[in-house]
Amino acid sequence: MATNDNIDVRFITRKWAPAMGGMETYCLRLTTEMAKTQRLDIIALAGKANGDVPGPLALIWFGISTAFRLLLMKSAKTVHIGDVASWPLGWIASLRHPASKIVLSAHGSDLNFATGEGIAARLYARYIWLGTRLLRKAVLIANSGWIADLAEQQGFQNISTVPLATDVKAIEAPARHNGCLFFAGRIIASKGLSFIVKEVLPLVPEPIKIRVAGTIWDEEEAKVLQSPAVEYLGILKSEDLVREYGSAICTVVPSLSKEGFGLVAAEAAACGGVVLASDHSGLAEVVTEDIGFVAATDDPQKWADIVTSIRGWSDKERGEKIGSSMQVAQQRYSWDRVARETIAAY
Image (tube, rainbow, N blue to C red; front, side):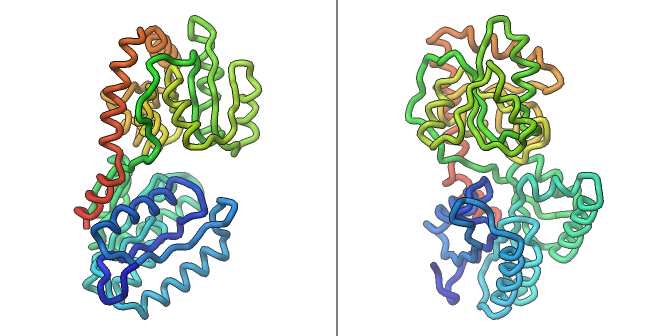
């Protein structure tokens, strides 16, 4: 940890271990890599011991206490705020030290919620709009081109796109599959598991099962786990997840709603898995032709046809395809690359 006299980057985040999630992983891994070349000062709100995010009171106190700390601290060359919703901390830092460069990271929920309907979404949109006016010179780092487009639509001007990365990867992938599809993620309607089980699997010529890993967020959606075509694995450790990605016919990522970045797709490809994902938002940016396949979720027959085609590959053909896609994914989605591109954005 740097002293106040020699700080390159002051990184401020409300997403930190032991809480578990994509934003927590981003903040931890990015700062770990940046610390190899930058002098960092990290101000973070730790999550709960059981892995949950902090409660509302803890979030409010973190915001207030950090604001006061920023007024008393010496300057840093760059003040990087870990999410757009925390932009007031960047504004306070800019008032105290006008020479500091202010940087905001934008994730899927940061900006997409502002495009929704209802009073809460409209109020949040106005809150984001205010941030764009008070931080006109701030640099916004989006984790996908889709998020970058949203940021521009909402008034941000200085935007860089830095795709995320993954530590989940395999040394080598099995050439043969286990005869099943694989789904990893939250069991919630927007993730599309029911779409696969109810609409896609019945169209596959020969019966096929899907193995499912993830936490249950929606009890109604969780009813699909009772289907005879589903084998629910619960929450998997990293080493088990690596094995499932590599040994499935393919990993399906059938998100029905927009995704800032398709992390599951990147993980699966880096583990030597074949990926079939929805053809929209950040997912389509991750699953390029050299990574896997995409299809529209209003066309279940297309999904069934792609699954049937992949299942028909010979061992040699499968080995060649996944060997190439795994190499591409591991090189493209590395945290070293994220750190270098983030520093370049500064």
